[in-house]
Image (cartoon, rainbow, N blue to C red; front, side, top):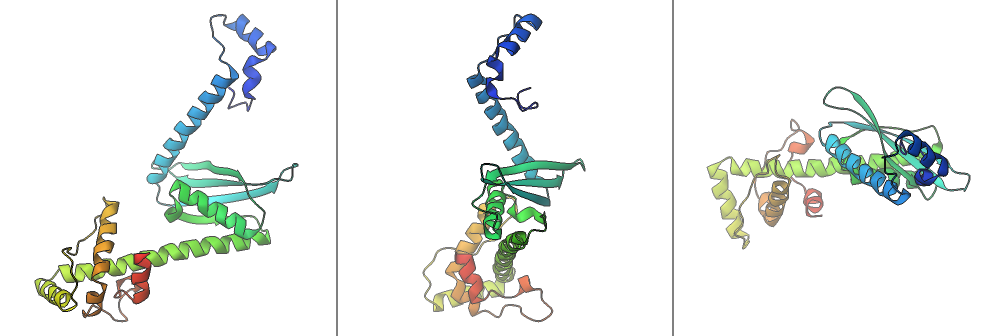
Length: 245
């Protein structure tokens, strides 16, 4: 009742409400406003975790933003997520309602980016819908840079993964790789490893190991050509730098 009707917590301590409950149900123990506040917060955290789990099953999430200034001259932003769940139902959930430093595009863009990263949905962003304020053009440009950076890092990982796969899939190339390791005087007992989709740390281990042999990869004749996709080309120096970071 408190949440649905947007009532203040102290509503349960008002004389009129207490008299109503006493007449309607004398056996009911009316909780204090402190208990009500605690229970509402507990419910909030519970619903929050349910939504976080729901996001894990979503492939794409669209967001809409709305910003305004209160009569107290405080800037606010509301961020709403829109997505289709496993039952093909369209959901609309507010994922952030917060004060922002200004209505400038950079401030809006950073607030949206921080929220998406907090919920772990920055890699599932499909569309962003804003109003026609010019500052939102800057905000969208900021988010475009974020998405572009994610795509570039994805390409780097794919290139390293393909290079590892190219070596590991041939006994001859494995021997050639080991020979180059010795010639390069790389003292490492690690061996190249694949990553698997069900273990996120396996990708980290794959990259960490491959970094030790980056000089060796540059000495191999890795597949290259115009018929290859961008993420299928051999790792370049800038790719190794991004993987290392």
